[in-house]
Image (cartoon, rainbow, N blue to C red; front, top):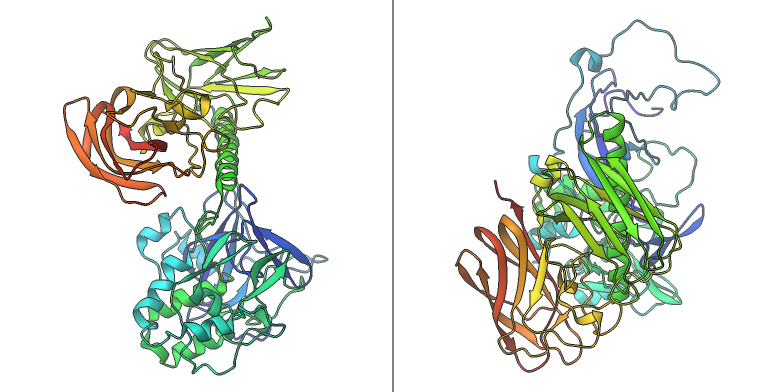
Length: 596
């Protein structure tokens, strides 16, 4: 790199990108162009996508590095100096296929010439392929993280322990982030003001996200109005932190143009301000050099209404469905498919019939709308009892236990309590397959079954309730295990739930159809006007064990953990309400594994 002394770069950081499955809320990035950042994970002009640091690898004295990265994962690279600051960063990404070899030679050469021929073996090649190691601020367990870099998890705890004892002036913080929408920014170049670095959250209406106050202060964000309020920042004009913006210029930047090395915040911390540890400073440097992400997932600190939540869940189901198809296709190409045959038939109420079969997986195309009363029949190979079934990608794939190997599903009225688009598609793919051993061994929600029905008694999981409100599909027991959690209303899409006709002595039973091992329940109580909160329930397992569970007054999903228990069914009973009102459960989940 021109202008950089050889040996300045000490390590290379590998970062993966996770793309959004849905578009909910947004802010704006601007610079070389202008674009809305939907489902934002940062302030305007910050990081566009969720970023996960996969680790670092040393750069040898001759400037070489040779390392292993995950296949089929978008990754980009950052060159770091001795203090962990970015010297240069990629602003594109690469995705490698399994066993693919990738070299920087080519892209980073004159396109009208070829590299000089050389018999020299680099120092990195002499050492061989290296595995990525944790960055200075990371623990070994971070290398297996499924979430991205998260300000609330990585940075706010540092501020809480080392900074907020002095930096408490919330009024000054509000003034700095321009809460009054004044035409000029009010950020001062004076770092001495004890502006608040607390984690109190502020919501930008357009983003539908709650940002920590400290994050907005350190990124020097301000509130902008364009039909809705949203947060944005200009990193090139930022006094405290400067980063590579999402809409930065397309030409090649010189090393150290932006990033933590040029950020006043890092210069202050390295001069002793706050007395932070090296690990803490390196974490803040990484946050800046990743372009100041606020959230490690697209639903983190989301301020969504019920329609937003339902959209996110349906779109996530759709992504998972296509990921599944991709994995099955790869197993087939590698000749490692599950060596069994699955057949699917469809008999429509208008007399039309369709059928197909396939190895490991069968995809049946039904070239017409799905109608109430149509019947789907899946026949598994002899001895197989587990089925992965999808009627609609928006409803999601479910692992269904079928004791006799034949699964029969009667299509319900899809205009109520089901994804709105399912009932209108003129062509539908119904997918049935046999799960792999790895899928069966996974720790998962064993109660999930969007294809359960009141009259289903030969497929599991299956739910029954002692009392259910009459008046439509939106109150049936099956709604509480369908995977959809919107709970702000009742009797209409997207807020289906199980609602009891009478709360007195009401019970709700989840039957797994075989013995499973469970250790956790997640439950979300419906929050419609007139609904009661639930103070306490008793979990009664079919093995005779009982556990009394006290619930908080929260209307969010609540997690209750207990000792591992082998059971075929769990009944929620002795339900005690907090105050008067209707009893309704939007979703209940039981997590565990198949019993060995």
